[in-house]
Length: 137
Image (cartoon, rainbow, N blue to C red; front, side):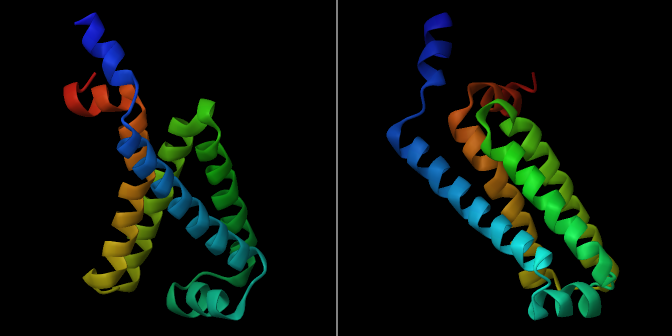
């Protein structure tokens, strides 16, 4: 059993590559959204204020929170904490979409897909995450 656990700690090249691609996609998306909110770009102001009903004053707060979560996610020692924090962001996004009555597709699909992309690299590379998902411990 010990040799099986040791062997499973090193992901295959394919798994490592897929994990890297997912992390890059998550990172690029979060930087784009966070910077758009911090700079208060017109399309983001329209979405945040008119569609979602938030005041403009919360945009820098949301952008900063996203960047902090991303920083936690990208540091190997805190990547699980970052993934948990980003799961909170996904939950908040789902709640906002429910509140505004957004259509199931594509809005929820994008948000939930993002949540999967956050955890997939950890599942592919981290034996502890795989064991928790597989065995519940």
